[in-house]
Image (cartoon, rainbow, N blue to C red; front, side):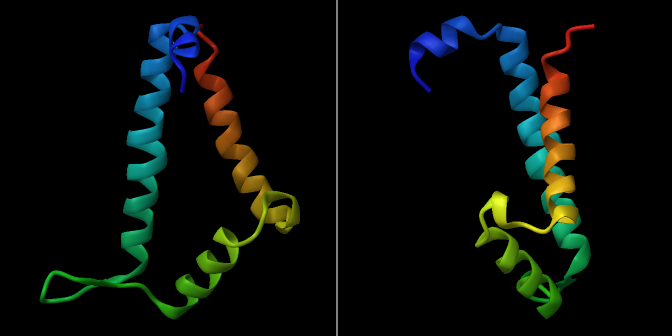
Length: 88
């Protein structure tokens, strides 16, 4: 992001976006993903085949080409981000 945008965006909103990105989006996804697999005795983690197939399909599909149910999930995430801009 260029410096102009950083100066324009309210510092509090930027912090809330960063907090969302870490605490809810990334960390939340990792907790969910890890809950679907198996932790092995050697400290590694194994993802189940269904998850590899599903998430591989999703990550390799453009948003416009996703099934409506999957788009709904992405729209819900977009709504959370939009909510960050509501300072009430």
